Length: 146
Image 1: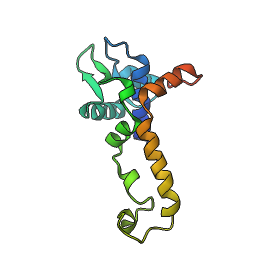
Image 2: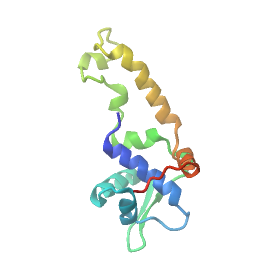
Image 3: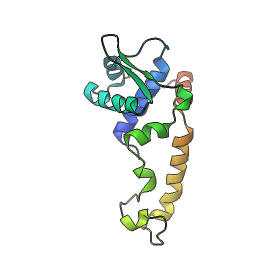
């Protein structure tokens, strides 16, 4: 369902939420190393999120990235929509054009089964926020870092 790019973006934003101290930004090399994401690729992802005002970006020797707003105000859908767009929530899973038109009565063979799942995923991504996920990670034995 999610592209690797979206998964990397979600992990990076949660990493920022877990490690942000409110004063200094976290450098891209640190994030890249700890998450095991290639630096140039991560840079493009984080710049895109900054362009859409989910992250703050500061250039220079003490620059880096931080959250642009409270982590509890950033939903997974905010991140996924910037990175992947909304196509996976609005188009046919098989890529058939007539199926994508909601007014159309003719749907693809999997439409009936997939439509409900797609709506559940959409609702999940809209309601889950980075702050809560970061808190759950802190309380568990999970780690974002490699």
